[in-house]
Image (cartoon, rainbow, N blue to C red):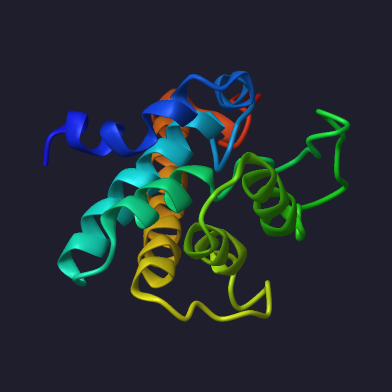
Length: 162
């Protein structure tokens, strides 16, 4: 698969200012949120094709699954004392306001299962769920590897150990 094929399905999303702002915040470990979302969308696209699902829905849902992880659209930024357990709802709402297809919305809403309490019911939703979990593991693994190589005590934020 070429990057152009995947980007064809998310071209309009790449131009949104709120999407570009994802580059300013970290996701899992040291990767920024844009890179995480891009990787999830790309892998979900591939998995949907393998599962004979709709690659367009999987690509868009994967790319938007953490659109507003950590902040609400109307407030732009706010901090949580811990993990954001409702980010799937906020991302779902933002995608709905953007006019995304109901199948894209379902995949976004269910990507946090079982914590989100609604299980994926379509091939595309399962592709997004699988892609997010696999990319999450890779994100943390790469962050830990880099941190160990550089002697960081806290691999999440690159704090040097004494």
